[in-house]
Image (tube, rainbow, N blue to C red; front, side, top):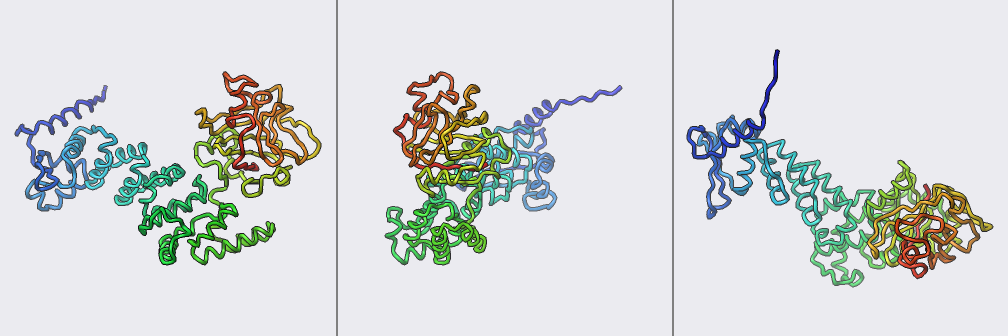
Length: 481
């Protein structure tokens, strides 16, 4: 009969004690590591064992096999790491245990990368990936590229992309290198308003050329404009001008900051767009085959700027192909605040998602799987319809899905003539008037209210937009699914 026995904890403890008892000669130390960061700094000495170091680190294994000076003198002097980091890592090499925190993680990663301690590279890198912060992300990105840590580099880019709406408003954005910006701008899924990205890019260029941010773009002198154009000539080709409104395109062209070849293409695009010839516009875009005419992401919303909001919509609609199916059918900002134009764009198109943003930054809307139509006013059955709230900073409410009441499924949405926009629920749960202004919302008649809120109360009337009918629409988007 056989029985396997192991006590790794005891082994770890014994080896740790072997290292920590530095003054005991019988421990047979045969290699010394000296830590001294500069000539004036205090010198710290650590006695070690070649066998332990070479087993745990490929660097030391190669060093001892090469018969280099350090091997001959049985001594290595380190100048680029602190005493505490060296002590922690040597303890780890002996015991297999180390504490990694936000203060030491980067230095541990740098040490383990330089001295080829593979498992420590992995655990310190994973810690950093799980604790990325906007304030330090650029340093982490540069470090990952310097040390050729591809996974950490990818995580850093992903973090920046997911937080880009916040990141571009910080001074850290201006510290990005051109190659970093180039990689970020190639991402088709940046959930940020494209015009805002462009404005931030101009600020970045000004910073690089030491042009005062206080100088308005149209007031930059000709020589500095040429320098600015040259500074981001490569990056400007990654801006998706097709996601601009017509007015934003015109304003941008007036500032004369876009290099001529691209500005000419944008002018051509605007001329064809004004002809209202979709076939001709589509042919132009296909012919040019430029990134500036490729929407940033297929979802295409200027309202949904945060990944968490997009993920909520995907969860509520319950469609695994939600992202690929989404097609923008109407934008009030681009197509006009006119319910007739809205009906002409969205009627008889099947499943739709209406997203509304108010001037006070409330974000909400509604979903119907039966779609919209014009004509005689009548109520339509849709047991899958729901209203949702994504952003309510005034009352600090979390995103919420408000499904239709079972007894009210026949009154989900209202078909009507061209005298009104989206109409959810018989009690004016959500309705927009003929010019898509003003809006009305009195939740609870047809769609469920959150617990604790009663129909007809001020809370019910202000839940979506902060008031019953005093809110104004900044943008309304309708997507086909």
